[in-house]
Image: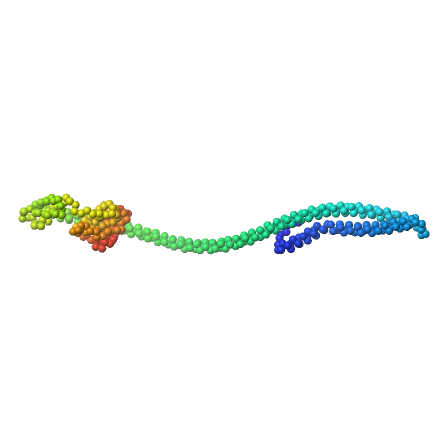
Length: 359
């Protein structure tokens, strides 16, 4: 079978060219045979005519003639006739062989035509598949171009992201160095602050001890002086209606300021916090007092003739207030809470001045 050829260009022209090639290839072995057959048939026809003519002459020679042919001529004619008959027989034999060859070649030609039909059908299927493959190849080529463009775009994006990542990495490294440096400085400052606060606490403790000692000495002296005088304790049912009456001795002051009073009734009841109350502290001057509790607020109250009045609600704590206190001059308020912090406010403007973390 011939080698497969690739389809290129216009397929109709290629089909026509291949048909011409096929005709040349199929007719190459039979053209010479048919030409030889035609020449033999022409020779046979001429010999037949010559034979008929000779037969007519032979019949004429059998008649009594005045020419008087010789016996040699008759023998020559008989030999010629026999040669022609043998040649005719040979031609008939070749004609039969040629006829059988023609039949065989006709059968082969029919088979070839059937094969050609099958090849045409296969060719049609191949052309259909080829058209589908061409369309699919075009589609795949478009997809390939699209993905190539997409790949180039992604490569550009990746390059940009790599540059940004490198820049961010450099910035991160710089910030990390600054952070570690600041962390180290912060640790040093915290350590220094703790040392300073410890020194300050020692000084405050020393001052408090000195103040307590002085106050105890003063109280001790006042108690000793008061013990020398006679005092009377008057029990009353209503604390608001209390009157202090000194004994009829010339050593007692007329206003009765040194007399003691034990109250038995409640003067005021009010809600100081929105939850549980944990601590209360009076100011040194006795005008104000602080309350603190579960509502995380430190409230400053003032005592008036109408009862306690709220002056400020100090915020900033993140947990319950556990303890409150005033300084000696009643200018600052201090509160400790469960968030491990101590906060200091001023009494005048109620502003947060300091916050100390204990951990």
